[in-house]
Image (cartoon, rainbow, N blue to C red; front, side, top):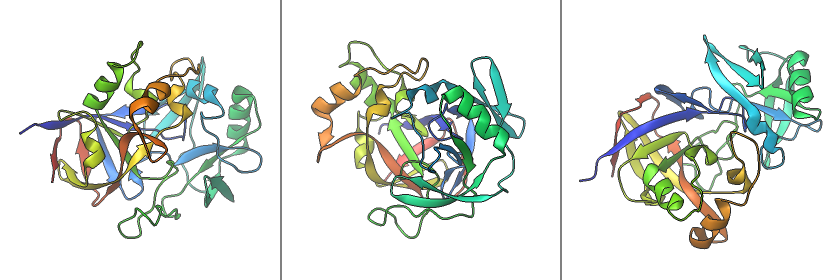
Length: 263
């Protein structure tokens, strides 16, 4: 039997900005703790991502004590630690969500460096954003991720893709939460019930990919790959799939090195 091991855990505290690799994480209903609980919105309250603003990749994050720091070139600031502030309704895809505005100094800091007027908002844990009714198991909610609490990708899937590319791409192009070793390429497409250590999950829908995968996460430059190559062999029902969207069944700790069991 093939052994599958959790090799990487990633969170992205601010949607579409840099990720942070963790050795362990608490699983919560909306996804991993701290994952995509913040985002930037434009003056109309619509969410911003690298799809339209690839330079967002240049904002990097790191853990700083009990919180997180965002850096841009040589400058950095700490994210607010509080979920309290002025309530505001923001648009993310087809969802209108109640968020909390960060202090004005944060809006200005991000606006100056992004080159457009934007605001930083927080999504409190108690606020609701239901998972798509076609795929949820009960009444699960999701963070400010595109649609589902977690994303898992096998290293074998990336290795297979890179074997087809002239220039390999790193896993960060796909912004997963969980990366595992072992198993066959793309087998996660078929996963339904599985566990990571003591935590149970359910795979609900392959992840459809977009132009964000073409943004170099180090430079913010945009190319054609890997989306062009993926489109030639990973297109299903007019969607280009890579990775599996996941809903947690229970909420425990997970750790790098945990064994993955697939039913």
